[in-house]
Image (cartoon, rainbow, N blue to C red):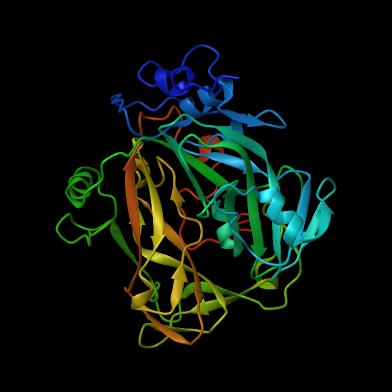
Length: 403
């Protein structure tokens, strides 16, 4: 095992190029862009592959190419889930397995698939583990489909004091906490509910740099002077749609059937969702505890040399939370021949009291962060991405109107 950072894939950053025999997805092509390697930033797909080869990323089963996204790695569920009495953080010096032993209720075999019931909390050891260098850290998020199914899932590491964060130089196993909220789900060994980004060092970020990038690329479809940039670029909600009583979203039905997350284009939307249509006055009353799928007014673009993350907006502006699944990959909405941007899908849940959400209200901010290098594949149909050029769209498990 190679443990020293000098032996990791990060020292290859300035030399990694797509080469003969490069492990790229079918149809994926290297991005034609000026290569601008940086010492710090989110690592791209080719560096993730290098980390797998150097065993800084290890797994019970070999890591497959389709797990490697442009700037993240999909994490796979192991063979067993533990139903626990409560969510927890292990804390400094404490292993997750020790907390499972103290709080566990029963074990569930995932090899043939098993039901995780909504409202319950489960811990699943993941197939991947890490052995990071001292300047390398990680941040995790649910995958887009997990968020759109209202599956609350977070990454936990041994000794963790925060969810979804992997401290620099971490060496050890990874676990997923899973709590289905809107629907009970069926999961199997190898299913992917969350993903991890790996970061080298602390890349600089500033509103000035974000304004400059917006002026160059057009991160949202607003003029440079009109974009709301402050600790990220603002997204607002579309509650008007196109025409009277237009479809503007979906609300999860409270007593729907199971959803097998391994299926694609399978379920009838009307069995699980109620349509939400534009109302006079351009507002929407969020019912406490209900889960909504809405869309942003703005179309979003992520250039190939950056990654982005949607962050929930300040709770002081309203009693709701937006967007569990926060990663936007390099290349999201970046297809000049097809027009600018793809709209962001917003997963919205109200808290304790009814709340009126208004059309064009700011509901979140997207933070952009540079990569250490341009990835050798970008988000889009060529690598099997599900949500490029999206509008208001449910998770991939549901049939599309055209299917």
